[in-house]
Every structure is written in C-alpha cells, then in structure tokens.
Image (tube, rainbow, N blue to C red; front, side, top):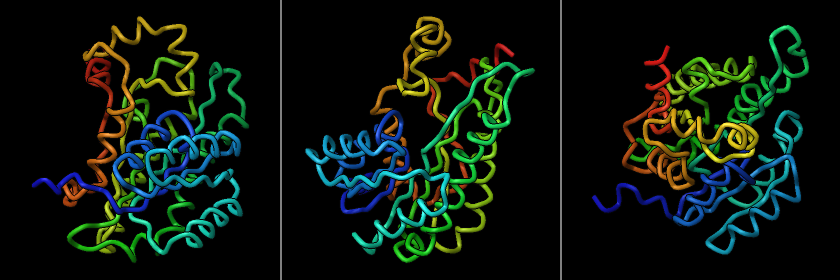
Amino acid sequence: MNKLFNISGKVALVTGGSRGIGEMIAEGFVKNGVKTFITSRKAEQCNETAKRLSKFGECISIPADLTDFNEIKKVKTKVEGATNTLNILVNNAGAVWAADFDNFPENGWNKVMDTNVKAMFFLTQQFIALLEKNGTNDDPSRIINIGSIDGLGIPRAETYSYPASKAAVHQLTRVMANRLAERNINVNAIAPGPFESQMMKSTLKSFSEEIINSVPRKRIGKPEDMAGASIFLSSKASAYITGIVMPVDGGSLIARRHME
C-alpha cells in the first residue's frame, strides 16, 4: 500500500511548465523523484524555472512554441536524445483571449484553439510510441490533459474560444483514452478551478474576494492541490482509471451549477 502513490524514478514531460499550473505540477514531480522536462515559449523563463527546480531533483528546460509542428518535433528529438523513457505526458500549455462577442477576433480564436487543442493532439501523437514502449498492463503510461471548469460550466468572462477549446480537450481526452487503453496508456484530464496562475492574475487582482467567496472551500487553489491530483493520476493508485475529467476546484463547479 505504501507504494501506491510512489512515482519516483519515472520520467515526465510537462508543457507550459515554466509557470502557473504547469510549474506547480512540475515542482510536485521533481520533488517526488521524477526526472521532468518542461517546455515554454519563453526561453529565459523556462531555463530559470528548470534551474530553480533542479535544486530539488532533475528538471530539464526545452524552450519551444508548440503551435509550430517543427518545434514539436524538436521537443521530441531533445527528449529522446536525453532518455529512452517517458512515463508521463502532461499537456498543460494553454492560451486565453478575452473580447466581447461582437468584436471577438479571428486571431484570438485561432491562437487559443491552436495552442489548447491542436498542439496538444500533435504533441501527444509524436510521443505516443515512447509512451507505449514504457507502459505495462500493471502500470500504464499516463497522459494528463489540463482542461478547465470553464469547459464544463458556463464562464462569466467573455473568452469564447477558451471554454470551447477546453470542452474539446475534455472530449478528446475521452476519445484518446478509449483508443489508447489497449496500448497500455491511461488518458485523463484535470479541470482546474481558480488557481494563482499567470492566466488568472488580472482576474484575481480585480475580483479576488468575490472569487474566494464563490468557492465552497473559501480559498484559491494551492500548488500542492494541483501537484497532488497530478501525482495521483501518475501513480499506481490510478492504474485502473482512464477517460475521466477530474475537477480540482474547491467545489466551484457545483456551486456554479447551483446558481445557474
């Protein structure tokens, strides 16, 4: 029983791992003995985060823009050049765009869909052989897609492409879970509620008290909340779980549905 949540010795890739939710997950992995690769569009930030996390274990920076297929292939080449193992893939890299309905731009739509859905699919496609190679029936490889409660409920903000993209992430998670189970790969999604991330920074600054009061647990998510959920979905404790969308939101979603 004491080995159920042990993930030490595994290898993970966390996209968008230099800040926010990705950094929370990467830090949880590194501190629990996982060799962790992180990606980010901003090279300096990615390198700085990897340097900080390397104080606790092994963290390798691979700066990349995953909306570019050539950059996806570069990430694959670098990971395979450093190791022949990949047990965990966390598709976290994401984007958001806010504008009122009448003025929502095409580039805002395309940027979000390309980052949140298209890049996730094609990055996973590139790493599927390595994940399959390292998965077993007893302990499958893991894919964790980061969705959002905005893909499950109706958001308050006018971010039209964002909830659409996250709903797509959730459905794609189920489709891939069904397809990849026979290849010893579990695919699950986490749907975060309010966390202190760069994406939420301006919203929390303006509406922090209101948001906290709307969460049944009466607080914003902490790094260990996100790390804990990711460790569970990466450990033997979840070996028989695939195709789920797990809200990690302090009850925000059920409260939102009640209000609706």
